[in-house]
Length: 144
Image 1 (cartoon, rainbow, N blue to C red):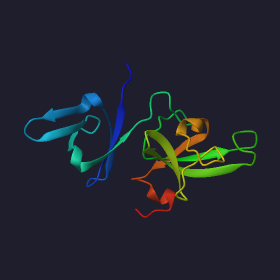
Image 2 (image 1 turned 90 degrees about the vertical axis):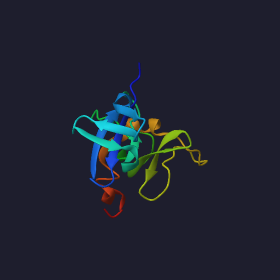
Image 3 (image 1 turned 90 degrees about the horizontal axis):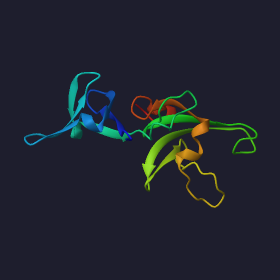
Image 4 (image 1 turned 120 degrees about the horizontal axis):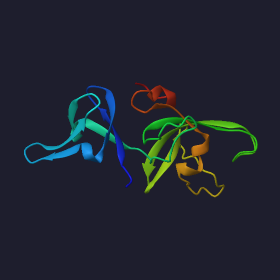
């Protein structure tokens, strides 16, 4: 059975932690909670930004699982998808029922000349996680 994994960024505490669907408990008195076992903390959903992992088979070039909100460096060399070597810095986003790559110039990374959006899965073999949007916004030229 496929396990759905998520990441929570606590807005006030400025910490990030992973959790699964089995870690979410419903409380009739207080609403939903995320139990973050690795730090023994309990967060309410409203205190966090929630991001989803792409799946067990979606890993960067170093074998690290990719997650929504990750910042990745994508390096294309000659003989890969592009004719000329290029490097992109992108954020993994979820949009239009797909995980996509939003580049630091504000554009979606595409393979086609006709402007058709393609998902991140076309680029996985070239991705390296270098940070995430909450702990490393400066990698996208944004302020902390």
